[in-house]
Image 1 (cartoon, rainbow, N blue to C red):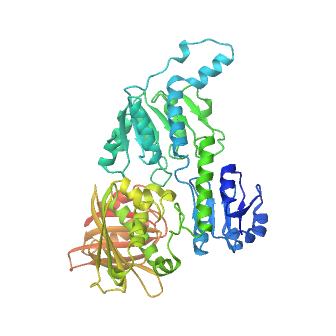
Image 2: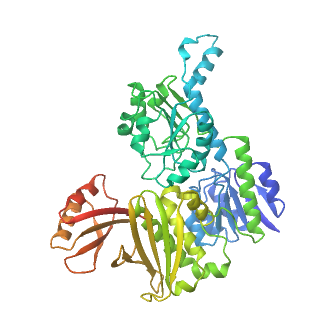
Image 3: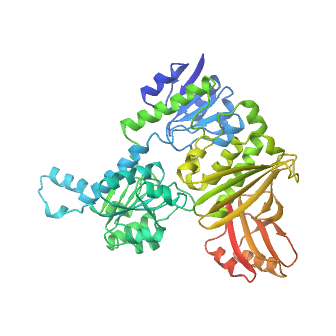
Length: 526
């Protein structure tokens, strides 16, 4: 009989499900070295946020088939190490959706009616009604940043309360937003018009300090901000200053840049600010939901069935997976790349399988392309299982084509993404040793291995361009690891692909575009 180790406290409902197919040992509070010693005995490991599953633990788990995280994030699991060892990693991306959405709504109403401070006042024996005159949310405008599952539920409830809905989400189609009753707008317009702003996006380089001093200065003095998503999306010092100076009316925060919250100027503010200790998922129902969800997936994998929320390996047969796994990584890399080049909202993805790949099973490669495409928007919440569903919900149409006549490489993948900012295309292939190569960019032939930090330019093929760009990057202390130019004809249009040792500093992209002859420039982080 299989054995499952539960190393963090989970609801009994999850343990009951696991007990149907395995012997379950609950051992919480284990030190890393203790876990390393015993993990080799188990076929599955179930955790929450307390256990860090390092590559050392994974290496010692010689019998592990699956690691289940009863929650959304898998930051405490070395997913790459698990993947290399053939261990499925699953999470519960929807288990706390309602809990998080309801907490955001509760924070909004509590902030509007000063409920925490009024409660404390009455408990002190006071009866001070004049100090707690609040604001109604009826007919007010709520700006929802991020229309994923949580943001969509907030939208539904806010609409029922008679609020006007604005939304910002560059990865959602206008049609999908309208179905939810939202007017899709850009971020600048949202912060200028909204009476309430609620955040429901992951923390990424693009969303870090999304709400900063510049954005706060554009808001109405009656605006209130709610963040139950991730700490760091708001510049907390800038927020505290804006509230002190009366530039906005207040804020309710459940998440912080550093947790537990230490010294912070937010603590000294009065009824304009509500602070809670990351309670978004802390409901009895949510804890039961995530325990059941992950336990069911562990049970299914132990029975030889696919997992519905795998974050690394899809539920494919071992023969298909062995054959397509390298090409799935190629497809995912190309999807990530073309998604960043396209920018904004992608409406159409054309996936063309070329050469020998045209005769292979295509669905895993299409799904891998979508996973890469959606990664910038969803991060760890997108996986091979839910990528197609997430794309459909965002109004992304997928066209699959095959062309066995293209024989430049044994097999190659061509992705073309069309969105609100135009169309971009990229082609890639695998070399004999499995190394990924980018072979074409927007119709220009190239031969470049992808790197972590890349810069792409579109320019006139004329003397001096390369030198000027190199000098400009050097003046900002940016080191170029490699560079290649792709062109169709001499002195015509060309593209330049640079691999960089570090990300570009803020503001340099606009300087690059000013270089005579350079028409456009894009940065990509893979």
